[in-house]
Image (cartoon, rainbow, N blue to C red; front, side, top):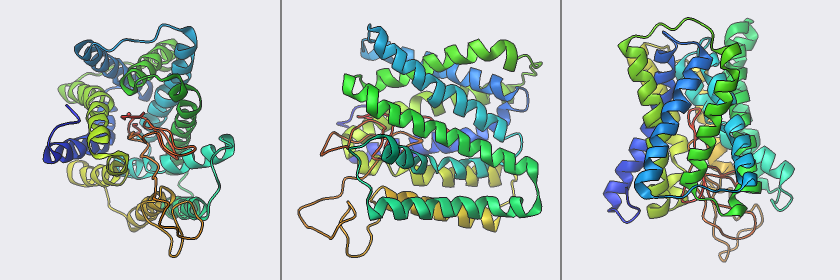
Amino acid sequence: MSPTASRPALVLAWFVAASCWGASFLFIKWGLEGLSPAQVALARVLLGSLFLGGWLLVTRTRLPRDRTTWAHLAVLGLFFCFLPFTLFAWAETRIDSGLAAVLNATTPLWTLVLVLAFLPAEKVTTRKVVGLLVGFAGVVVVTLPDLAAGAGGSLLGQLACLGATACYGVALVWVRRFVIPRGVQPLVIAFGQVTCGLGWCLLAAPVLSRDPVDLSWTVVLAMVALGVLGTGLAFVLNTAVTAGLGATFASTVTYLSPVIGVVLGVVVLGEELTVAGVAGGAVVILGVAVGQGLLRLPGRRPDGGPRDARAPAVPATAVATGAAVPPSRGAQPPAGQPDAAAPPPPAGHGAPRARA
């Protein structure tokens, strides 16, 4: 899709991308009917790599040839694909798909924590601190009922989701620190990290993917949808949206995709809609919005200081999904990557500048 497409077409592309990422949790749940968590992750990156590789051929995009860039992409494959995709799939053997979608929204919070810890140029501001505190308060609201009830299995599933989003945070900071400065195109980053993720999955397959496979049409179609739509098409669409409508608009997929994930879980799978899940999810999304500067604190400008009309807000992008931030002042890189921004997966999913 071209970034020069009409605004209605780009808005539709934004909705489709958010829907693909939100539905990914449903596809994972269906895939687990016949595959183990590691096999779900393997099928996802295999099909995603094939789709993105085909897109590279269509667009005639060249791949980098230097070993250093591929070494960084291998790190991304580990933290952006293999680990989080496996953790999310494992988590969904213990928790509902809708809850996994809600917890995926914590990706920008982990990214912001790591950005502030490891990128010295990033300023610690009141806005960012408040956003983090509010967001993690939402996580407490979500997990507290199971913690109080001693529901160990469910709690472990939720911790696995948080571990997955923490991996996304590591990957997004890595992209910003080591990959974006090398001038690698967003689509190349997406293909490289997914393909390297496939390599990690294959290396782990003799240990993690030995379970019997029970393929049905539901499982096969779910994996095709997860790989092609949730790990491939969504990135391509969001890249066009970021280029055509801007990183601020593209980053709002962070707020829509969890809602879609919860709705699909309730409507399609008959999952229970709990008060803690809804309230905690809303608080998490509120914290992300504050931390990214989409909601401003009264009497303060976006960087956390007193309001100054000369200083416009430069939001951080949406992470799990992967919108991008165009280069701008200071530590404000592009690409699906942070201010707490980030490139794509997805669902655990989440790219780079524009834009995945």
